Length: 336
Image 1: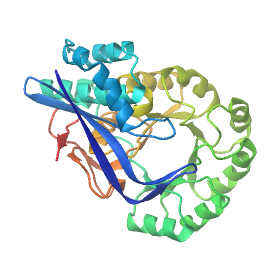
Image 2: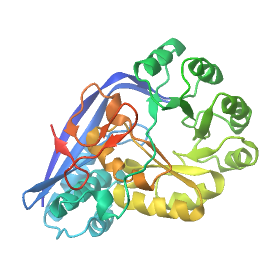
Image 3: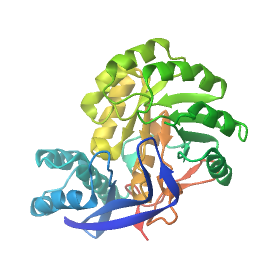
């Protein structure tokens, strides 16, 4: 195989703010793996919370470039195990694993969901994310993109008021994501009000390691609670299954499609809900997520919708939330 590594700076339509950070651009690493006239593409975005930059992800891959290019690629699963043995970060592994899966499907001329024998005729609709801003700006963003389900980023002193005001302008389903900004007491107190305002669930209200707080939330919260920052890798699933009603898997955090599929199976065996979320990726990362959606209860794959300009062709998300899957094999990605 031959590797290519390219940096893209993705411009966002609006400043994107959550409880701990804001940004107008998203750095992204696109990896290409080429063999037999086909190229598979994968993506990992930089993330300050996890101390991941384009430069350090690229340096990790360059350090083992020769070994990767000489690897006898047959299956994405064996390639992923090889990458793990090289002690790469999960972000770098994710980009390579997504590229390997896309390449594998293209070589077989089959989409991944078909290779995995999943039926894509039914699937959950993605939510559309409204980042933290002034309340008038958040209302404006919502009106700009009418959508059946919104994820509302919270973590301010006016959280309940934000949801109350947004509710005046839409009948859409709401999900709220506090990104670790609340206490157990706040979560329990906010939940009945949010429930009356049409909120479906709360995502990651407490700090990632606040398991004692989550015990209280599990006992007293009237809304389901979904783990995000508490659920990074496969080994986190059992504990999250005891403290949350579901998990939100991020491909970059867990290391790609290969471990994500195992996490989905484990969560389902525990009887908890499964969501896959994005990290403001382009259509490269989003098209990979889309291959998983027949297996999911919820999905957050609006990353490319939040960009001023996309860098790739892949899945198309229509205004009503329907997905048009590409005809190419793998994740169906073509770079623009």
